[in-house]
Every structure is written in C-alpha cells, then in structure tokens.
Image 1 (tube, chains in turn cyan, yellow):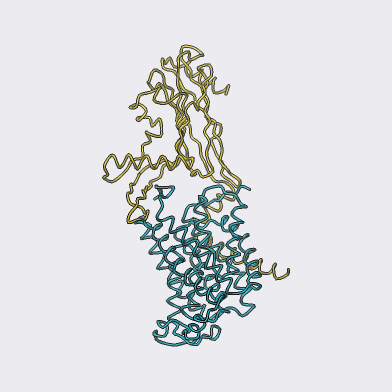
Image 2 (tube, rainbow over the protein chains, first blue to last red):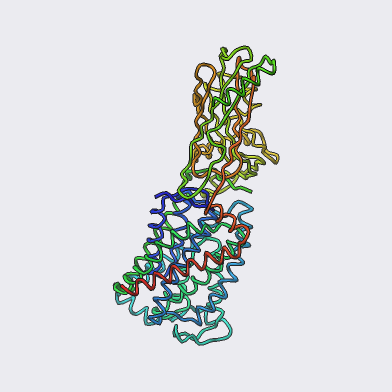
Length: 304
Length: 251
C-alpha cells in the first residue's frame, strides 16, 4: 500500500508504518515507555528525513500514551501531583533541548551526540534494570539481605531542600528531585525524539524510589504532556511534523498500546522489567556497534 | 506532434537559416504529486530539422539534461575520530540541483570533448555545484564525488547512456524517471543537438512538479498556520488514543 507523505516528500509503504506503530504501541502499553527510541531510528533507516522522523514520532507517542494514561488512571496508577511536577520540568527541558538541538545541528554533530547519548543512557539503564530484575526473579540469600538494607530512594534526593508529600507514590521528598528529572527527560525528548519513558521509568524506580504500581502510569502521564509540547515546538520551529505519517503511526500504536496494557496485567512485573532491560540493552549494543563501524553512508546532506 | 512539425517547418521556411533547428517537447508539463504518488516517467521528445530539407540527413547526437530546482546545501563527510565515526570534513554548495539526469544517444565523451561537456554540464562529472569557502581542490573533488554518489544511490542523480533514441535522424525520444522523493518546483529539460563535437542547437522545456489537492493543502497549512497545524496534530493523536481506549473497553 503506497502512501505519499506530504511533509517528508516521499512515498512509503503504509502497512510498514502501521506495523511500526503497532510495535511501539505494544512497548508503550507494556512498559510505559513511549517507544520513540525505536520509531525514530527505524523511520530514519527507512529513508524519512531525521527531523521529520523525530517530530512525527513525538506526535505518535502522544497518542500511544493517551490510551495508556486512561487505562492506568482507571487502575489508580497515576500520581498526578508528582507527574505535574515532572511535566513542568519537562516543558523547560524541551525548550533547552530545542536550543541545544539548533546549536549541535549548526556544528554538524547532532547525530553523533544523539548516538553517544543513546549508548550511554540505554547502556547504563539497561544494565541497572537487568541486574535488579534478575535479583527479584532469583533472590539469592545475599540479594535478599541487600534488599532489606537498601534505602528506598537515592541519598542525593534526600539532600535537596524542601519536602512535599506525594501520596500516590508513597513519598515524602523534595519536589526538586522530580523537577530536575523532568528537565533532563525534556531535554532528551527534544534531542532524541523520544518520549523519555525508558529513562523516566527506571529513574522513578531507582532514584526517586516510587512505589512500583504508579511508575508506569505517572511516566506515561509525563510523556503525554511533554510530547504535546515538543510536537507544538516542532510545528512552530522546524515545521517537520508530517500529519499523514503521524496518523498512520497512530493507527498502529493506539491499538498496540491497548494490547500492551492487556498483556501487562497478565505478566509478572519482574519479567516485564527483565524484557525491557533486554530490549534497551540490545538497542544500546546496536548503537555502540554503529558508532565504531564504518557507516554505509559516509556523506550526509543538509539543506540550508 | 504533427502540429509541432508543422510549426517547425514554417519556422525554417520563413527564416533562411543554415543551422538545424531543434524542436523539443515533454510528455507532461506538470507532474502532480498527490496521494499514491510513487514517482513518474517523463518522455522528452522532439525533432531535429535541417533548413535545407525535411530530413536532417546528418549524423546527430542528442543529449537531454533534466535538472531540478537548486538548493544551497552543506555536505558533511564522516571520518573515524578516536574510534568513533563522526562528521569531520564539510563543504557548502550554493546551488546543488535537487535532481539531475542526463540521457544521451551515445557516451557523452564520445560525442564531445571534456571542455564542451563541462560548459553544458553534460554528465554527473560536470555538474556545477558552486562550492563555497576555501578548500583545496583535491578535497573538493572528493566531496563532490561523494555527493554525486550519495544522490545517485537515492535515484536523484543519474546518467543514462543510450537513453535517447533517434529515429530517421529526425525524431528523438528519451525517458527519464522521477522517483517519489523528488523536490517540488520547476524542472528544466535542456536538449542539445550535437554534431561533429559541436553543440549546434539547444532548447529548453519546463516541467513543473507540484503537490495538488490534500498534499498541497497540508504543506501550505503546516507553513502558514503552524500553530493551528501543531494543535491539529496534537488533537488528532489525543483523539485517536481516546477512541482506541474506548473501543478496547467495549471488547
């Protein structure tokens, strides 16, 4: 099925786009990650210009997270207060990200920075998650002991001034912790064209120490609003949002998101985390490999 | 076709010119880019007429150059730095054609010498890209070759040897395909009649590639009403997410 994309200026296979949306939608519903970290590189690989891919992927992530947020809020899986704080940080972060994006694009190093960021973030987070998941699946005596002794949130978080109560997450911490997290994720959203869920989810679990039940929902809530902001920012600055591309990605991803949520309720959380860790590590490995190996295309063209 | 021939006949009948005349035509002057556009094929045809008779009689060669709108671009070259492949060298080109195709009735360098080929841009080696900035010629040549190679593989730059058929030394025709990723704008098709290594006549025809209907509407909407376009994209995604949630709740 041929589909002409009016902003990307090329013809693609519509079914492939829907399938890609479906895949990322399932990931979104299953793990609370937007799936943008797969959509953007795959679209670029397919020949869609990088800016259009990043901009349209963020539009798609919005749709995938709506259904996720709706499903999660019914299960009382969203901490709106904490989510609100991260959203505020996220919008600031997106603005900072937009400035950084322009600068790096002008120097011509945006791709390599994005790739290195991917490798570092995904590598670190993936191994952390894999380790945790393994420990909870096969609790050796040592691991159990360690768990008892473990603090609920990172010592740095307690060092921040001011304390708020976040009932949904079962936390009494400084609002600056989720705010800073929001800013960091916002920057990455704009730079990497991703929802940032793959950073948000582990950071909420292991840095903030939120109760696991609200992590996925709150992360999706944050992604929903931050991707809305980035879509608007792209529409106004790069004008690279391809609504036809986004719509076809959406058809797949909204369906996938629902399927993912259904599966998530039947599978053990530890296994889910282990699966996500595996995916994250694979993507990181592929990207690391890509950095070291001579690329297919030595040359790239930027229209001025 | 008949009308063209007639016009041409009138033309050389009225003007007592010695040099042959080239009468070019394109199968379509407008390429409409709409939903389902997967590229198209342009037929560039015409006649070579000699003022002294209906038939040209002489040995002619035809070269057709189809050129898309030019853009200022920056080309970057990746290199291995500290074990990582990243952009290193770069060059700006003031006028890189977004599409460039050359079709000829024989190998270009068998028809004309290199100098003539360079003057009329008769081949991928002779595209005038107007590089800017000071850069040494070897490096410039390498980067230019890189750009041509990249765009050739994207189907945007091509050279079709023997892509022009000449029948009876009067009529010629060339087929050039446009891929779906072509830039919109005005394309110029320049036809050269060459005899004995000399360009004896040339003529230009224009083809406009433009988006129509929904595709055109989307493009204009996204540029002129960027805010509302963004809002539409956001609303669409929220709506679709909500609908899916509702539908699945029913199942």
